[in-house]
Image (cartoon, rainbow, N blue to C red; front, side):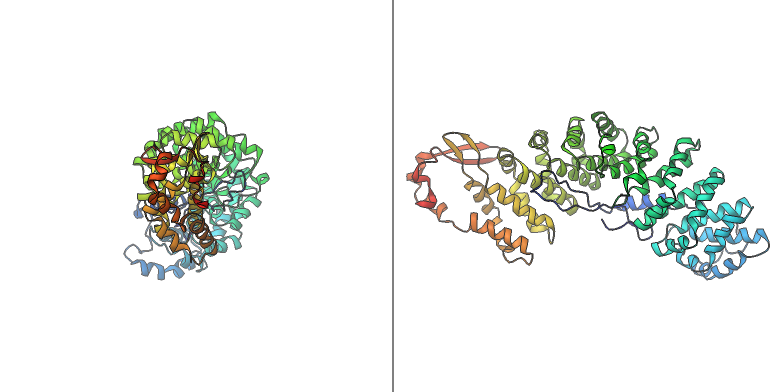
Length: 539
């Protein structure tokens, strides 16, 4: 769920977008995940344990009528009570700390972390015999792990991970859930902290819990925590996580939606790893099952789409499994109706499919997806629009001349002109320019006597304002963009005398001119392209 995970629960997991090289046979793109407020709220709920009601906390310290500011000012007194000889007062202090940490908006995590409470709470976890104090201390630690990296580092410096590991080994389910929850939060914080979790052999501990627990809540929380270990890029070394891979795969087939959701998020990340043990999981039957999940539950649509997106970022064989699974017919209706986050994921997936084989691109075109992609590329919100344009660009750069002509006939030039106007300081600009150049170079042979002339494509491009856009990029500060614009301008647009010659000598050339309808586009043909009269450049 590019930038690291959170600043205190607010960042959703993102993956980097790889730089694309069209010279290689198959370089797929990895998603730049988009921040969606709904997902941020969901991540917060996953990470943080809140009170159902504040009144669950005993207010024996008479703090219920204090303002939040007064309660925060009272934290040093709570820390002192943690050392009290009476366990009842210790418990009251722990409960008040939990109460503060479960405030929904901006809990005072930092104030508690730097108050000196951490070592005292950890000591309760290690030594107290009072189960209520121990459980609520674990609860407090769990919510502290929703803080930022510096706050979590304080916990790690106080050796919280070995303490939580020992709880998992020796305590009952109730407090083990808290320990697993806290470890999942730590794993999601940073690559460094994730690796610390791995170094403590927690993968194998999580596998053991998943395989053996009868507690459904502990099972769900452990799956979530384990999935956090594999969601960050760069991915961990495969050897360190290989035991959890088949677990996640089989969990995708669970009947519990929450379990399937977390398993999909994990398996999606695993599919970015180039490894034979990962690749063999991608079968036609598995992809058909994922398609069925798309139809079964609204809450599974995004994680399943992300799984498909990473599958098609792999081999052509994996992409073919997705196509044959019935993916295209299912996502067609989603593009028309579903939220923008879903349209984004679909367009991202389609952009990678279009980096596959000509047959795979043809399958997408035959499903009549191009018109809706063109509409999205012109009219959707910016981050969705860009993914749709990536898809169209990829067809132009990798597709056959026939496929390019189909896109032109459906209006792809207008999308590219619109994109060049609205997208700023983005690598996509350079790719759009390359795609335009590829369209201008199109050469479609119908038979030995008829040759398609791309001049009409150039003419249409000029008529919709393309020339002015290209001129704008001639002096772009980005040298790569300005160079591509100059190539287009000098090779296709700058010399208009040929067009003028055709118009001025229409009677002479008319006997050689034929027309063909391709969609809404009227294409100009010359019946004898070898006739010297048709050689504009030499006449």
